[in-house]
Amino acid sequence: MKECCVVVPAVKKNAVIPDQLVKRLAGVTLIERAIHIARGFAPGEDVFVVTDSQEIELICERAGVQCRRNNHLCFRSLDIVAELRDSLTELASRYIYCCILRASCPLLTWVDLNDAWKKYRKTDADGLVTVKSVRQRIWNVRGGTMESFLGDKEEQFLVESRALIIVRLALLAAKNDGPGKIVPYYLNERGIEIQSYQDWWICERLLLRRHIVFVVVGYQAIGMGHVFRAIMLAHEISSHKISFVCTRQSELAVESIARKDYKIVRQGPEPLADTVLSLRPDMVINDILNTDVPYMATLMAASARCVNFEDEGPGADMADMVINALYEDSENTERLCCGPEYFCLRDEFADAARNTLRPEVKTVLITFGGTDSRDFSRRVLDIIEPVCHERDIAIRLVAGPGYTHRQAMEARLEELANPLVEFTCATNVMSRMMEGADLAICSAGRTVYELAHMRVPAIVAASHEREARHTFARSRNGFVFLGVMDKVNDAKIRNVFLAMLKYPRRARFFWRQTELDFTGNKARVVDLMLNVLQKRP
Image 1: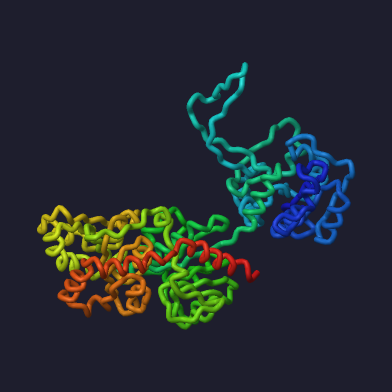
Image 2 (image 1 turned 45 degrees about the horizontal axis):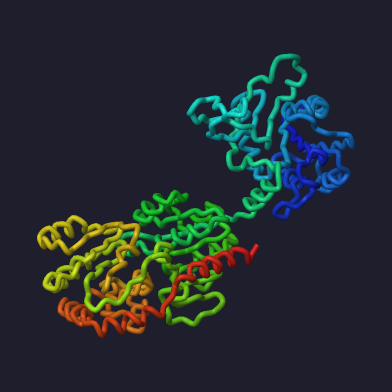
């Protein structure tokens, strides 16, 4: 005797949707999908389709599987084992076990079938049933009113998913011995059974989902801007599966993404491309700055589509698309998208109250990104605080989640004892920090775009040489650019700050910012990414 066979019930009379079994779902008919799953588990000679349809019989013949056709076949109960008793009894002389695979549960995969079989054999059970776990209150209507069976409790129940049943065929010969030992196999979200057009629509959308993997970098030296942008873009994609890969040194990135409940994998000792490909992505979004050729070649060889952000490395030429919003010195092509029209504004800014121009500066904002590893915030505070104290100007200090100088900053604020200085660390509402600010001093990263949207003229100093190449932060867009912070002396910062307190210059910069609009950029970038996902099979 052979160990196991697969039986696929395919009775057209029992379909809830006309021609359900031979209608294409995400490009493949239900019966063909079920046969493919069965063939991934057993050879064609051990796969049997039980049907009432001549059309399905032909499909089985072409697919190389066995078929048992009975024109009068019709299932009248939910007990599929009892309905198939004649066929199963025939197979009992040739097989020890039988897997009954239902074509109406298209989210099941051959991997599930193999896994269920292994778990079943380890238990030495008589049967296995696929189930879904649900938490619900159960009610009954009696005399026109509802009564709860469990009072106010919400209980967890196991509901049968009619995707798969495994049965020991010798049980069919037993008389009045009951079903024997039955074990569960949990399917949960893959246990959807097509019982309506709505189920069909949901299953089709789930089958068309692809896996998008964001590869990000975020630590003290490089900041958290890449992580924030990747999370923002991931939030916009609801039709596909999303995962994150963080580079080996990106502990800060792991902590930030973990709060958003996405799947995260941190690079181990293996090359980064191996970590990424272990997730079997359909598309990779690289937000890791410059890529090299070996990394990109490995991804492309695996047929993963690639969209890279701010990539000027040798691997950028191999990407399907490169988006460099912070660099304006490249010519745009279909594959290369550069400039501020590709900067993605976070949702919190879309509804924020954009500032009006006031005759005098009442509030100054100081912020140097998510890490500010050199503590430029405290240096700028010491330079401008005496001026602000003299003129009753409030100072808002905003540091990111990777700011490691918090204790030193708090000690300095205690020394100053200036009630007009407010310090905020790791805020989730940066737009609120910018509302009401008349002037800002900041680094040259993505913050300058947000300040331009909020109409806050700013004095900008780059944290390093690469950041100095972000040419948006210039006077044409309402900013005074000082250069790299390490090369700027305190006297220059103070003098420029005093100049920006004067209304005519600040007003000129303010009106330039009123002409800028980034509100539609995020949707445009997401569309570009998803178009890349659809281009190559």
